Image 1: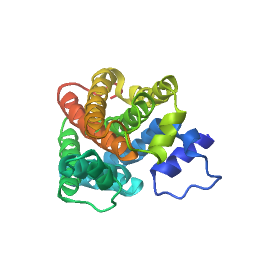
Image 2 (image 1 turned 90 degrees about the horizontal axis):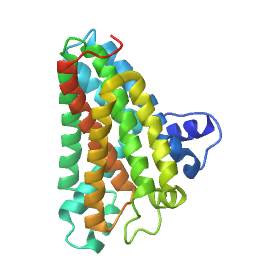
Image 3 (image 1 turned 120 degrees about the vertical axis):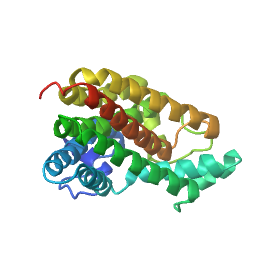
Length: 255
């Protein structure tokens, strides 16, 4: 339980009482913590979709998720977009990644991420079982987004010039087997709410994470913390898009 609380402290801006847990101990709980965040956001979406227009319910749910996490992963996505889009050398890309300011590529990437999630959630909300599917979509998106990040953390080498940072330190301490087992926590949480939808959703998450990892290896030689945030965002968006398609064709298993 301490690891889960530590993961929630790390991923959110919510004040959680208790003793801080070292990051290398809580990292294995990130996918489960993601499922908890997704359940909170999805539960809010479920409530709002019953009383508000779909577009407004979707926007408020996504914005709530951003507020809960303090735009933690959005920041990583923006930094990666700036570095990979505007850095012409390895050294320059690493320099941009260390810069807390957002440039044009970063702002555009963050805006696209929020827009895609809102539109996908809106599309989910208007189908026959939209409220239930919203809950499924947000739990799966947040859980699998963190599963993707943890999976990459244990299987992809640190970036060429990365010598410090939580991403590098946790990656060194986390074996591939431990990382994949931890990622399985997010898959299990998804399976509880999504049923057989879990199969295409996990496949989508793996594909999205693999593309981000391949790009990171090509651009900077491996992982840094911002790349993990970018992977989470890419997977979160893709999962919601796929859920919008599934919800238009099939019922949620527990409805």
